[in-house]
Length: 282
Image 1 (tube, rainbow, N blue to C red):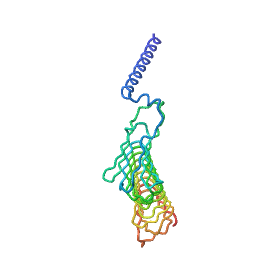
Image 2: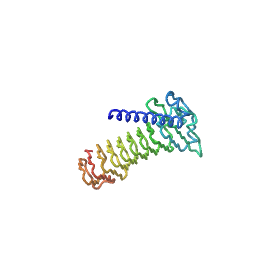
Image 3: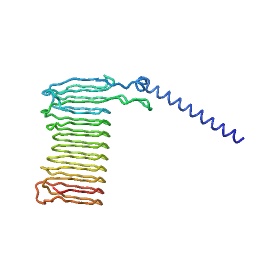
Image 4: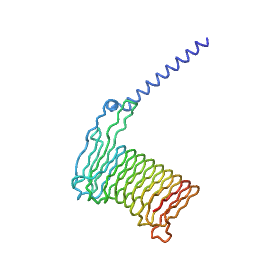
């Protein structure tokens, strides 16, 4: 009798599980019926947009890609070039309004259960080296990569994407959990929540703030007062110019090996809660 009841219970569980899976499948089809076959079978991406613009007509470039990776490269011509990869030609909008080049790309997010393949979903903007306008880029999960463009001022913002900059003039960067890697810049203003900040060479000013990310700097040649602030992340500076370093930490360790000139023209304030502070010799 006990075995009979047990078998009946198992049968009921199996039937209910099958019904639940069928209902889930019907829901997926209804929500995603227009893109079902492209979701499971279509993986080829194409160039959905390609055009060029005279740089004399453009003083500002605004790029918004929700999940797209955005790359800014040096152009081989004297024009600004825009290239976008994806599936649907309707997902990108490019326009020029009052000398501002506006680029917006949205991608429909298909439901995927192990059968989909990744689609190349990129925006590439090629800019002449002598361009002196401003570039603003915003993404949610897409990465941002910037080539060596030493005269450009940039404002970069992403939620979970990584940011990599080879060279720029003035940088304003904001990210939540993405990593920030800057090889060279004159000014770097960076704010993150949990992402690490890695800087190569900064030649004028820094304003860095992170909650739990580490901050690593190879070379600082400051000409203006600067600041670094972190809660639980460590701060490590390998080499820096003649500045006065003022530090404050609650429970972290401090090790200042560099010559700390109290009468220097510039001051660097470093503040942490529980992170360590290390400044190597000049």
